[in-house]
Length: 120
Image (cartoon, rainbow, N blue to C red; front, side, top):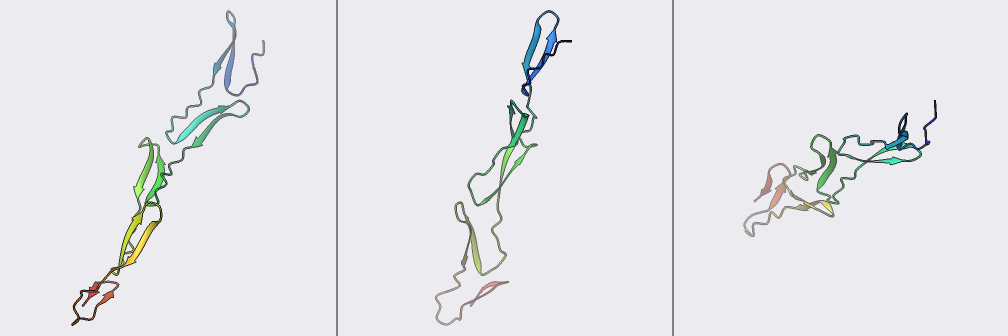
């Protein structure tokens, strides 16, 4: 038997009686939409996870093979505190500010209860 190996991890080599040495590329496709597939000549197939970071602090980023790629789920910024207003800024992330309970009526004392909200 003739050794048809080219010592290249990215090729499959066979020896055909008519054609001689036949070399074909290795198929590194792992059929996972969450990886980038390539072949390193020394180590063989590589499957590197893709980055799904959308640079938006208001989303949780992940990759889902079943849904064919990146998923960006809105982050819940609620602290369930009645005396704060919560928003999400794409750069800064979760932003909390105090609720303004001033009803502009000088005859009331304005305050905020964390469970029920503004009181007058």
